[in-house]
Image 1 (cartoon, rainbow, N blue to C red):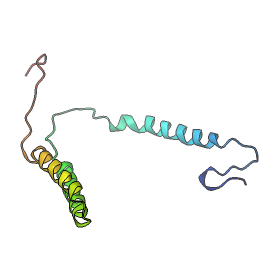
Image 2: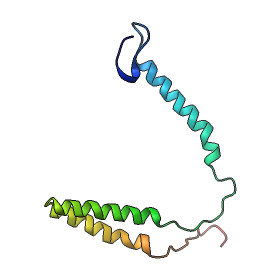
Image 3: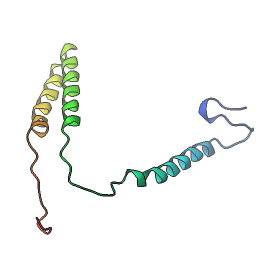
Image 4: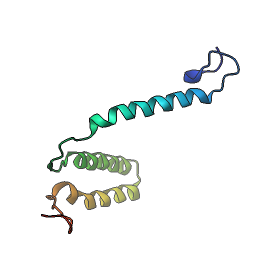
Length: 104
């Protein structure tokens, strides 16, 4: 057996790129098989989920505090400003927009 790691070959003179192509082909086949099950067959209007934005802001605040503890006050200030700009997206109610060419 020649080579190291995941791309070890069983025979001498084998092309190492072939293993990568096999992995890529397997990924494409898996995506083609899984995608139809992920598509919503009966789309209905769903409520806006705010949890991911709140988690993002909390993690971002944690990184800002870590930057402040390390003495990087400029980076902490930039993170704080952007968190304050993004906070209304997480808290305020979402307004529904209708396209002008579609019926209300």
